[in-house]
Length: 531
Figure (spheres, rainbow, N blue to C red):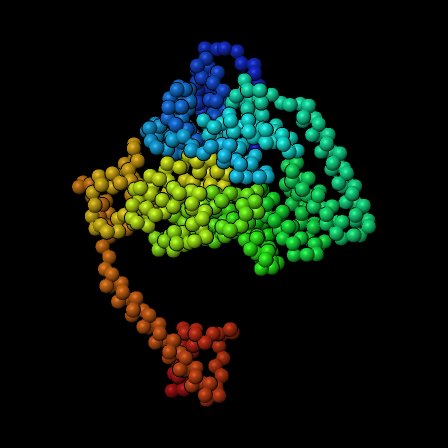
């Protein structure tokens, strides 16, 4: 958690503990609420703090919001809560985007192991109104299973704001003191053992000592120290398995740090040091890591290609510390829809036997891809929108969902218009319209950006697509290729003649045989000089 947010939550928790009833309005951030009616609502206080920090808030079902006037007031005017422009905020309360997340928290978190379990629970607790309390309680319980006291503290701090009456909202001071004491003695022991190993100059012992120390740092939350200590293992590894283990550790820590560049760097080293047997076992972990790193860098096509290439016959336990098989289907399907054309979607997604196994776990993704390939674009968008709330609760997707969905929507609109030379705006609104937002503005922005080649007739309410002449394009392409082939043939014949005459043409260094422009110009210059 960001330090400013942590201090803000602590300040709010103290306010909740000592607040006295008042009839005067209370201002919190950019919002002003009557104190007696609103500031006694812990959920409102918590999500106002989240909203003021720019967090994404998934509202849940409409009825849940309507039952709380203070929450309705917040979500009807809050930009951060809706992730939409202010002018669409009120109307969005009645759209499909307010559907409650479909995920079952217990079943969902069972798919993961390691530190990602807490990361996902804590994100859901900060982002989902209906799942907030349950997720934060689960996050606090998950933190108590480990040795990272900072995580436990931040989860309980959030609970003290969102649900102060819950038993879990009270700090377990005895546990905190016990774990802090154990951590202190454990780090002292590990450092002393490692120092002894180094004095004895036994490489295998030094490697094991560094690995144990790095795992301790990772489990206690010091990821920077963990990465540095894992890196120190490299000079002491002696087998391919040990090299692979070091790479896995470094990739896992880099993913937790959101250091996408280091993930790619460690992946390249892993690929160079794999045996065929190890490649089969490590392939899903490496491809998923590559896909997540590419997603973090917003290289959607590269990310989609990596997820689609993931093998499905490997036990999920080899990679569920970073993602689950359900995630592979969702990530791969969404990114493919955002970055691939219909032919690639058919061949690389629907006809991909390995990826089809992942799609069986998320049938709605397969349905969305099938609808797009078959030209049912409205159904594709509708299917994806019904799961938007779930995807906004994913630690890797949340930041990119607006951009991914916008790209898919633009592709659907462009593909929908291909058969038409002229179409009414009413028809477009019926197919792609959003309540409270005329589609004209969206079409106008697409035309301005060059995504859509069309014109809008605002008087007759028609959209006219730019006419294209396929025959003319084909002829121009054929002439261009013929001219290119002729230049290549003349250039090669000229060089063959020079070689047969034992002549050497001196020009730019590293000039390739197929280079056309420079050699042709030089030949013409020499011919004029001879004349």
